[in-house]
Image 1: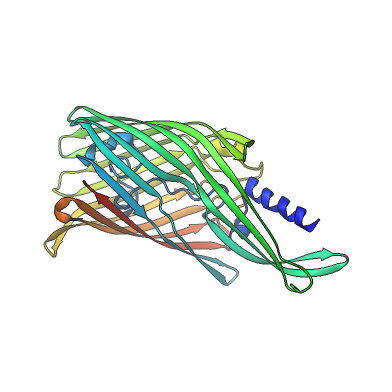
Image 2: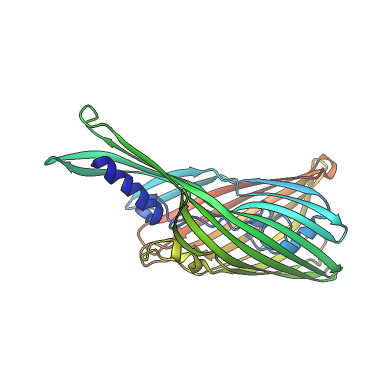
Length: 378
């Protein structure tokens, strides 16, 4: 009987995304944390370059700015601290949020493939509990963990009919899984064996996107992208548990380019996260979130014979999944640097992000994220 109840609990936690105290986090409520598909370079500017940066997976028309074949890899560990009632809990999350490859078909027509996380739901937490068995109250340690994400695989095509305009389209396969593990260890293990259960659900969906960049010579650029979500299903094995739509997203960036080696930019985006409502429980709080940022990428000093790009920015956004009746807001400041390697055949970008997250409760969350991006040109 206990085993059956525990299996039901694991399934429920997968179907009805856990609340903050069960996840030990404000940022991974609901179906997870939005990593946004932004490159390390863009994160160093707070996200402001998102729609004009060819390494970011938001605007398909921007891949023309790479100027040739390139492979890009990104790693992003996060060091998170949750504070509540005078106590703190620290967690390290390892993410690999973006991989992309771009190749020119002609000088004005490019194709690209990117793999990024739409929502990352990696967490673990441990809590104490009691259970009555045969009239006896037993104490136990209950551990819950989730490992997985909803991924976005995009194939993009971009074309420049004139020097001042770039156009792009993208087709997206939305896929991924969440693997939940639940373990209950009784204090008296000599009499009661530990109980464990694992369960996996998968996501299957699609979307389409389009984008444009408009250049005013070498002085400025304005860019926009729109993603239109198609259907998405939550499945366990071959069984469809629920259905919804991939969230629509509209994003705009503008940048001043009039100083050599410098981009000063602003960006805002609106994600229609409520399109996912059909996948979760009726009580899950989902917010259609704005994501805004301002930042700069400037030509810095030379170091060991190499030119450095220096970056800084700030970002304000609402996370898609709230706690109870409260939204979770995130504010962050960032800084970064980048340089060319191997005579221009490779480039490395670094960014540090300090984020604070709040839901108007006694619980607060802060995090340091280190983003590392490597670009290789064959």
